[in-house]
Length: 337
Ligand code: DAH
Image 1 (cartoon, rainbow, N blue to C red):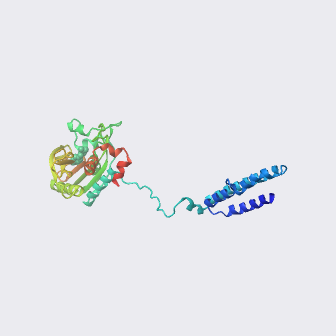
Image 2: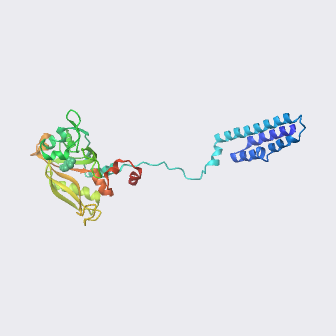
Image 3: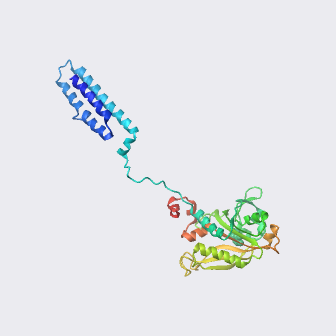
């Protein structure tokens, strides 16, 4: 019996060492330690031994069982460390995992798309601070302290005359203070207003401002540049309409409408049955604005315009609630890849 035990131990040890994968190890466990395994069979024979041999051989057999179990575990751990095991749990012929790719936020995409059209017309991109003074946000733009139009540009005040800019127009002034005409600039950025949040309002939103100045810049240039932009952005079939309006920093001023590209101008729920969508404000730069930056309004002429990025993105992509832009819901953002 002892010989058998020793022989079995040697045999098991050899076989376990040369087992090549966990399937082979499972088979060996069954072969030796399974219910009908070789060691189990020997354990079953203990009962038939003479009583004086039982304890010694019983002990030997238990030791053999423990050794085989230990060897199996050791080999299993060894195999787990070796790349041979890969084929046990991975199908190496499957294609790899594609890591999820991010994408631009729809507002970033809208800003990029709009700016690139103007870059194509020779404009350059300029930026300005979001914290402003009354002078840049109002005074230099010909918005008088007591003028009712100041309400439209009301904002959040910080200490010491500082405030969050309520439009990108102050960058016109900052740029002209340091640069001489002729120039064409476009100014994307965030603006702030004390508006309650709803489907079409937010305390923070984005605008793109434009400013062109030089000799003999006319309203025809303004119409031409904005028509090129609108046809590029909304499609060749888009019709453009200029409606007289009032802005303190331009004279004359206009609001610009584009024919509704949902209904083609017939009237639908998006354009409120009007057939037109208002997309921006514009006009010829007011002489007082040129005076504020020490330009001679007798010599320099120019036009300016400003548009709301959220509004344009909502129209372009058929989005009916502005809050979607700021909630960071992946199901929304993923649609703009
Ligand atoms: N600053 C205006 C606003 O926030 C938009 C605007 C209108 C800008 C006409 C302009 C302009 O430069 O000429 O509503």
